[in-house]
Length: 390
Image 1 (cartoon, rainbow, N blue to C red):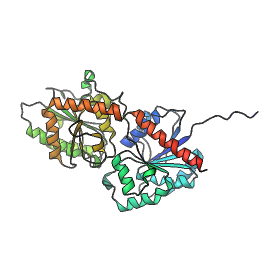
Image 2 (spheres, rainbow, N blue to C red):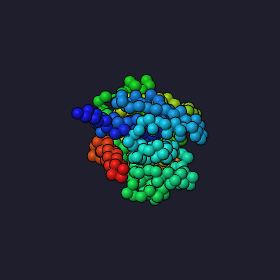
Image 3 (tube, one colour):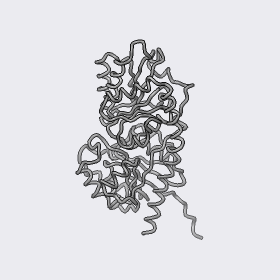
Image 4 (cartoon, rainbow, N blue to C red):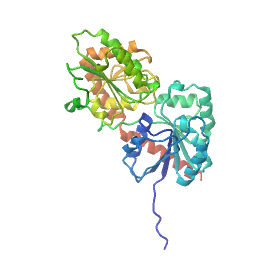
């Protein structure tokens, strides 16, 4: 009698640049945490390394591998990647963004039969996705990829029109948000987490969350805050600014606040793990990015019942409904940003109305369930397609 073969779910090897705090990485963690264990197994290959952020994974069977890539062209990682693919023998390799896309070629050489690439947004070096060298590289690697995933319709159109991917090979899947973790709950404001006296006078709190890197353009938000302060009468409702996150722009923002003598009116605590609670202390969420895919922090703010002011870039216009859940402004324009923030400062009823509608939209359209099912459908499809062609 033949021994019964033990079933092991298919293995997905996710290849990313670095596993730290960020929207792409947050989406990966959410996806792995919500895919049923009997459907797929996972490994994460980091070209650079990983931080404590990996502890947000709820599964203890996920192997995390760091290649510790050197700066610049480090060709040694290709041989290492090949050996890892041969050892893991994954059923699917799923790369994300340009920095990891070359792993598709290595995966093909290593014999991985199902290959997916995801585009999650752009960085400061190519805000519009028009860089000829980068797009040529994408076009060269394109034949090695079976399916592409875009997190926004904007990125989907760009993949089809600029990278010339066949529409049949592109799947658009929005990020999901944990709407039970992020929710409006004014009864548990975490005032004690903030600096002493920060909430004196019942201030209007303008908040933001994100990596403080160039592409997020947080200095524009700080400048807008200063412009609005000049406009508000001394007897008016106090104004406060909260920016949660870390990165190279944090010292710059702090210097702008210091030079204006208002550093005590702003709180920039760096990275925090209690963001759902801290969002409950905000009155308005603002994201001043120069480029975006689909912002996880906008979705989390909407789930928290906050109106959102964002720049009219990337997928932001697909999330923020003008005059219904928030407002959109041009990027790199602190004066325009200040003007729109002032509308919410002046009109509490509008702020509450837009925040309630934002929460409704999250529950209807951006659930974790919908995102997970979208990815499962693509994984199942690429496995089925390639099994049929074996």
